[in-house]
Image (cartoon, one colour):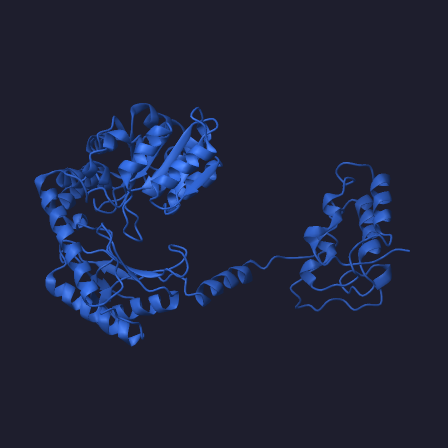
Length: 522
């Protein structure tokens, strides 16, 4: 006796793993196996609990249904497995059932199609989930004012208003430095806007090579390589190392940026995660998970962008040297801001020469756009030759390159030293004022000031209230940028935020904090 069923879970359908699938065996053996499956040995109840799980969508004889032989096999299959209650397929056992409604989302087209995936509904559900958890991203609509940094014009609220930006990564205001702007204008006039191609096909210019030389000199390395962003630089470089070096094991800080994580994942190299900024845990993992002869790559970032902590770099390098590990250090939030010439935390600590590969950005303290990698000549040439993120994309344009080179040169100079000193004083002053007001601000050693909130909806609401009522732009930082339950406001003072601006910020934050019934420390 045949059992006619609709599977309750297509993923568990035994036909998916059938060794007598249509592509491998002759028709008699296929039909024999189908007949066996039609006996009462099937483990599925004859219940249809949803059109999206209908067995018709998994019929192994759906292909090439114009072939009369396939149509016959399809009929045998349907008669064996479709229940008598099914109104979607008018086979012998369902002749008396009415056809499906015309407005059903499931349209049967001949015998080849049973289910259509509703893409729009799927995307809407994903977005609704983001909105319900207050993690849906709303991009503020602003126009920064190069003549009145750190102010901008905001258009997010339906009316134009001037706002004070307290969350920009243009830490030193170099994006509007007169010499940087002049360099960009001159490059446009001489070379045009675009580069015209990839580095390999007409897009490699003297401007690229000059900037790479400038960056290598900044970090005391033999060579450099510029990318369209530091996300690409990190992902492409780590992916290349992870796929090329045989047996490479990667050890990554738990607080590493998404670009570093993405490069590690896509390389598919074995990975081991050590606790954030914990060199001792890194040492334990290397002892447990590797031998001295195995190649290893240790990855960290010096300044953690969302909590403001700084890696104990000397201890990190000590461990890596003990275990003969290649070191990969991200200085994105440190270049331009730390060190005598703006070479980052490694320069400030006097240990640049101990690091194998350093990445940085041109789009934060340097005020331009793009990312870069510096290392010895052999490593750079290897990444240049193998990294798809460099090979298969249009190179950086002339005005960006010229502006970046001018900015790097300025921040290497005495002017850069003065800017860094004022930036440090301003960050310390703002942090102290916020703490004195009772706001939950931790003592962190960097220029980044996180203000802990711990709730996504509240954090977003505070950010909106500051913008609308107090003309202060302070972005809320929610999941997935930070772990759920650790939502925060991320403050980044610049040398151009005055005492009066700081007073306005603190007073406004206290008012909004109280209006949300959040406690202040006293």
